[in-house]
Figure 1: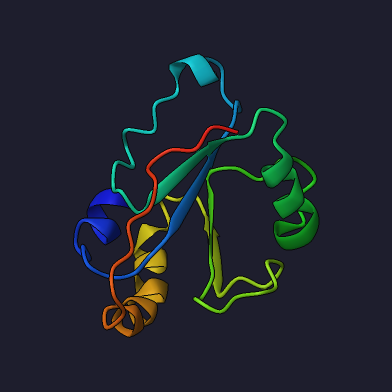
Figure 2: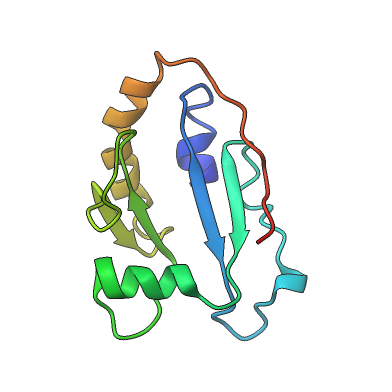
Length: 123
């Protein structure tokens, strides 16, 4: 995401929300830094209770367990989070699909003025 999409498209008015939580042995908030997604348009959240992953399981992916290592793509006027324009997993394995799906949105947003976003939010 960082190298393949954000770095190659530095000006669009684009928001990326990353939600991190403990899924693998060794994952923890104390070890998390989000440096793999250093673009200022990325807002990081730590979700200790996996509320977001469980919500996506119940409403989008319909998985029995927590959804993780997953992306959901929404347009600028999205109001129904249960209906992303595209979704996929794993993020690294699906980066070409995500890039293809996001390309029309990036073209549409490149004409909008840039907005500064906070880099990291604690919740």
